[in-house]
Length: 414
Image 1 (cartoon, helix red, strand yellow):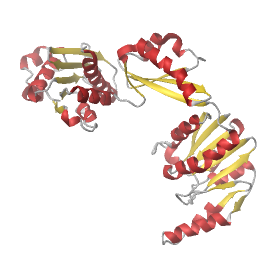
Image 2: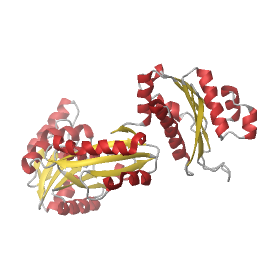
Image 3: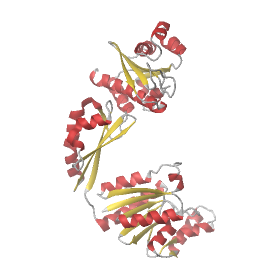
Image 4: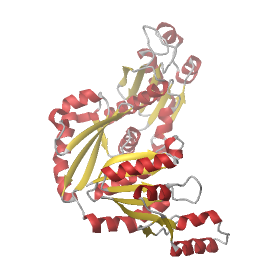
């Protein structure tokens, strides 16, 4: 069977708010073997709603709708669904009585407009809402089952978990369980990783290995379908082991791991202290590290030395280095790291200097050129990187590269 999730609301289509309901529902359906084939987001417009609902009921066995069940004029879900089903809206007295009880409990008069929440497409089943005023709707439309729920997550989630899901299982039964595991990688390009994996990423393979990338972080999602969770995991685990062997140190974590979390755990476990010296990243590295609870015992602090004077006065970078090599250079990155290590008396110090852009580059030093230095017990090492012209992307990637250098040193002394 195929499912479609429709998220209703102009705040979603305009970009003002992010649709988290669709993601959550997809994960819950996967747990019981129901595969989501389509995600659709539609504005608060009657014609658009009718069109989207009509298409969904023709191509999906199950349609889950969130949003548009409130009392205001832009809440159109119940009316649009009735139009698609070719039925009238009918008044449900028990739902109206519950609405009145809610407002009596709140000691507030019920606006007349809330009465619309007691109307449902003829032939539908009312889905109770124990956490708000908007009941859900369960309706057969042709060969499709449509279930409408509130858009507010604190109302939608318990409604789905406690009422909708048990009835879906009664109707459809549990299908093949869909299980995912994700490996997180950094330090190589997407195409290079795919080439290293070879047959693992071949289309039609089971388990399936998918690749996504975000600001140089590569996520490998291994997906298996089986009769039980244990069976699916037994298919996935050998792939995870083999992929780790192939990619080696490129893999830094699993699931939602971020580089700063991995580095923070390593610093804490090994009791290694760190300080930071940043130029083009403007404190991003320090900000990411200080998101971690307990990091204060190993992260001693940082310097944002954006101007050359700050590099000299705060980190001891010599005027000679700045004159001969420039602020964006291997020599400056090394001096920044060593100066930071000395100032904070830390085991490690990492430095970042570069040209974030979009202006300031030259043929010799183009926009996106970044140097990262790491001072340690045996000296200092510097690596250079070249990215594109997008300022924020360059800052994020430079921060990740600095974290990755610390990680590689802590894990293997590289």
